[in-house]
Image (cartoon, rainbow, N blue to C red; front, side):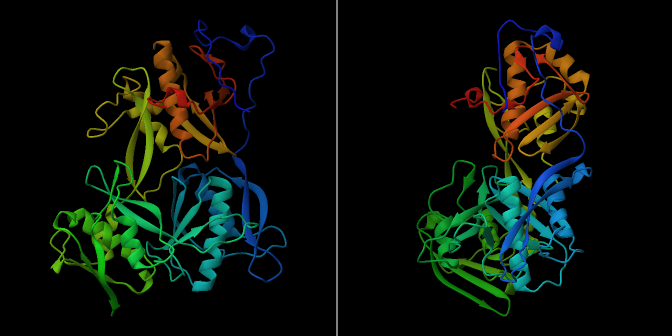
Length: 433
């Protein structure tokens, strides 16, 4: 159980002798973590069963979940059966906001085999990363499977009809197409349902619908690899250029994706274009795909933390601890105007020696320069710095506790915050939280 103590009047980085009967949290040893992997059981009925094992985390630059999936690909070590060929190549893995995006290289697996592999991926990532939905692509393209997203329910749960698809929304900056799972209406699990799902109400100020609420599907066809989507609605709800790209991406990630090479869109009979093109291929819009990561920085008054949403390409290789250096480097131009850096010396980004996961525990290792700098801060500034890191890492739920180390060893406290035990998320530090 993590411990979060903040007692006033206890400054500095005293020794453990300063505290009676203090037992520092044991630093996880080795470069492994325990993971639950899902393989086919021996019955031959296509059902999954779990195998728990230690996963090698020595290849840190790939990220923890990349290594978990690699272990799944290598196959079972028991009587269970593999879910894919052992030479399946991983191109990229990203987990964010309950959605896992996994891209693999060219494969000989047929649609039925890919469906089983995706189900095993989904259950494995749900167990280890709390990703409720998994998107599997092959060299960036959807394989020929029944529906775009796999919803993990746990192998003992009753499977429901999957009515979840991938929607794309305009970012507030107008630069990205942000992907998010959307639930389709029960009576419209189709392209019509997708248009309905991504039109109308915005999904928060950071995700703007690509088309306005009056837009409705007039017609849809797919012939000779070209998808033609015609919309009709009020003039003010006509999609702008980025909205056109988002709609095209919705189709490229829709149920007909495997047969689709081009997308053509019209609104009230008028051709829609993106960057001058009215007939779009994947390469025209794929670079826009982004995912939101939430980082915490100090507010304008230096009293609370405020969330800042930062968009990153979904197929950019990132480990779970990329976010740490981003926080230390401070907010970017164009982000929330009220966000302030947590440290004045951005050279301290190099003080982060690395991190790793041990179950739901994140272990962060900093060198002495980080703690020496933090000692120069006020107690309030120190708390903002520490909990900006903790709250950012625990934002998505797959990480619950954060342990701080100094050059690989336990540290007692920093200012009034005791660090010899893992820290839990602190919602009270968030403005309005």
